[in-house]
Amino acid sequence: FIKKNWRFLGFGVFLNFFSSTGQTFYISIFGGEFRRDFDLSDGDFGFIYMIATLLSAVSLIWLGRLIDFMDLRFYTLLICLGSVTASFLTSIASSTLMLLIAFYLLRLMGQGLMNHAAVTSMGRYFTVQRGRAIGIITLGNTLGLAVYPLVGVILIRHYGWSYSWLITAVIYSIFLIPATLWLLKDQRIRHHTYLAERSKERASTTPIDHYSVKDMLTEKQFYLIAPAMLTSPFLLTGFLFHQVSIFDIKNWSMTIFASGFIGLATASFLTSLALGPLIDRWRARNLLPFMLTPLIIALIVLNHFQAEFFGYIYLIFLGSCFGTTFTIAGAIWPELYGTKNLGAIKSIIKSIMVFASALSPWVFGLLFDAGFGITQISYFSIGIIVLTATLAKISQKSNGR
Image (cartoon, rainbow, N blue to C red; front, side, top):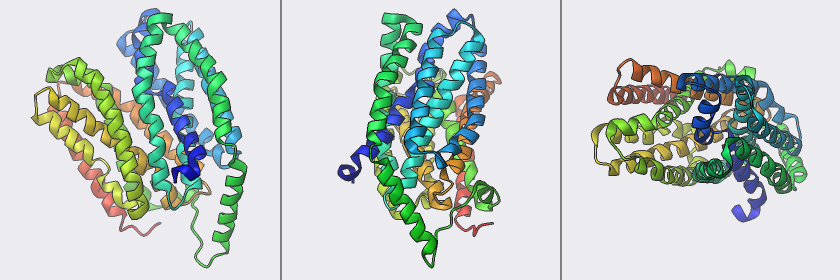
């Protein structure tokens, strides 16, 4: 499968890897420098970041659906140019407003549209082996999580934050744009094949139903599935964003925290890779109720074990949950609602998930400030997971609108 489709799969890996400039784990590396040079408190910095993320979520609703109408090569080119622009604006930011605009573009192009284009294209052009394809391209996320924080630290140390982002913009201009377009060299043939298969579907006696966004929003199973999909980014982002506080509470070494991210990234990729064939065999919808099971295990470890070794175990299961979430979330929408309007459907879903991930650091922070301990927050989170998994299980018995 990889040998036959290596170029297109490589395109998905590349976009997921280079989306790292818009991910929290990379931008947060520069947090100290941003706060110092722009005279921002922790609260000010978090507020600016939240506003930028929420604005990017709103923009995704409209910009994400364009992938249904544009040539994938042109769409990707625009995203890459947008990412270059975002990095350049970050490097020359001289006011809080400019920093907000730069964060908005980084989040929109990186966390938003690059990942959206990678997963949507895999969901559209692969049918029988869709889960396997989405599992494979998570390699890009894994490599980004493992490489970008280290690169960011090295760049800051040698060049400072401004030149670091300028170097990023130059590298993306020289390498990312031509590389992704080269990987899409066979896109015209691929798209013609997809259109021919769509024509066969329409002519068959049992055509596949391709939903519109309106159709999806009027179907009750969507509202049974959505809570599980929103719970994942909300809880994962919340626990990841407050990892330093959690490790301080547990008295776990920050060395474990730093090195444990390698285990987190590896677990995420291996889980995605293993889950792909299972999705192709049993369907993502049937696996959805179990999607957050690794997070339950991680939280049980967090609550009941004190030895530092269990810090690694906690991060590994956290990474495993990232893998299950990414793969199931990528495969379930084309499986349920077809591929004709997949860009529009996924842009709505993606924007809601980004919105949830933007709110969770603030909500978790409020809970900590209100005196709730990590144990209380963990068990409350487990209760939410069980509830949303039950709703997802009920959705399997739903027969539509």
